[in-house]
Length: 416
Image (cartoon, rainbow, N blue to C red; front, side):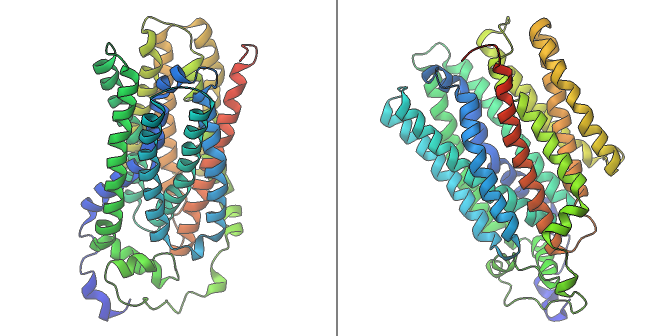
C-alpha cells in the first residue's frame, strides 16, 4: 500500500468497537421500519379485517425488494455504495413519517383507499430494504467478520426492540380509547427518529472511523470502485492505486461466484423460505385461541425476535460457529421438520409448546444466518466480497418472498 497514505489510517484496529456499535445501529435501522409495520399488525387487522394485512403487506413488500435487489446484484461493481445506502435510509425515514401522516389524514379509518396507501408505503419499504441491506452487507463483507455479525445482530435487534415496545404500548394503552392507534402512532414516531439517526451516522460518523478507512482503502487497492465515494467523504484524496498483481480478468464474475457458492445461496434461501412460511402470518392468524387472548400473537412474535437476536450472537464464540459447508446445509434442511411440528402444535398442543417452537425457530434462524454470511466471503478479494454479499442478500430476499407466498397455504380449507 502507498506509504504516503499511511498517515491517513495509522492504526487499522483503532475505532473497531465504535464501528461495531455503529454497524449494530445501522442494522437495526435496516429493518426497524418494516418490523414496526409487522408488529402493529393487530392494529391493521382491526381496521382492515377483510384484507389479511399480516399476509398482504408482506406480499406487497417482497416483489419490490427482490426486483430492486436483483438489479443491484447485477450492477453492484459500479454502484456508488454511499449514495445507495443513504438513499435507502432516507426512504425509510420518509416512509415511516408518511405512515403517521396517512393515519392522521384518514383519522384511523379503514376502507380500501387507506389500505392501498399502507400498501404503497409497504412497497417503498421494500425498495429501501434492497438499497440498504444489500449495500451494507456488500460493504461490510470486505471488512472484518465482526462488523457483519454486528450488523446482522442489529437486524434481529430491531425485531426484539419493536416487540418489547409493542408489549409496553399495549399495556399502557389497552384500556384507553383508541389505544391500538395511539400505540401504532408512537411506534412510527420512534421509528422515524431512529431512521434519521441512521442517516446521520452513516453520512458523518462511519466513513471517518480509522478501521473503516483502512478496509475501504484496501478494497480500493484491490480494484473495488464501490468504496470511492465513502473514501472521498472521509477525506481520502484521490483514488488509491490498484495493486498491479490483481488483473481485471482474474476477478470472478458474479456468475462464477454464484456457481462456486451455490450451497451458501441455497442455505440462505431455504432458511428464509421456512421462517417466513411460519412467521409472522401463521403465528398471527392460525394458532387458535389461548389463555393469553389478544396478547398471544404478540408474545409469539416477541419470543421469535428475542431468540433470533440471541442466535446471532452465538457465532461470536469461536467453538460454536459452524463453518463446515456440508453441516450448514444439513442444519438448514433439518429445520423443515418444524412445518409438521407447528401444524400439530397449533391443532393439538398448548401455548407453552407453541412458544417453545417459536423460540427455536428464531434461534436457528439467527444462528444459521450469521454463520452463512460470515463464512461465504472468506478467501475473496474486496470486489468479489462485495458481490458475494449482494448475492446472498438477493437470495435472502427471494427466500422471504417464497416463504410469504407459501404462508398462504395455511389458509387452505379455512376460507377467506
